[in-house]
Image (cartoon, rainbow, N blue to C red):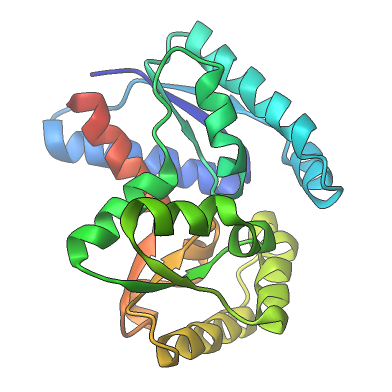
Length: 230
């Protein structure tokens, strides 16, 4: 089994989900006492969040590159960035290391392509929903049409992610808002919904939604195990 390098802490609540899923999937496949070989580099999310909202992406790229290089030096044989938004600098990170970066958007896009969907809704931070690094990759590499909520709805999602979910707060009223937003995307033709923030699955579950949801945390983590064992 290859050693998995995890860049986590964005937030630690979602990173623990990565660790749980990776180890549960490893045990499911291998049985017995098996668990995954992992190395974790966990950042201080307060520093990351501040730089994100100050639009200081060059500094953030440097932090991600340092984390990836540290994991490689610690023996990681491939690397995951355990958050959607920070895939904005995934190409720069990959170019700075000698081991593969398992890209979250690619693992998610592959699942959607296998399901035969053509139009999907995307929920995430405003950075993820509005910038092209995520939507563009899904469109260019997987031929998907990606719908995003309207401006007011994007503001609601972004606020809930940073002011509630990243702080470990699960609010029923916020869940109802998310479901209304998702319903609007479905009414506009979305055949599936990408939960494109690692915290959103803490709030929204498949049983809440009438179309398939794509939990990027679970997809990415399970793909990591397959890659490690492959």
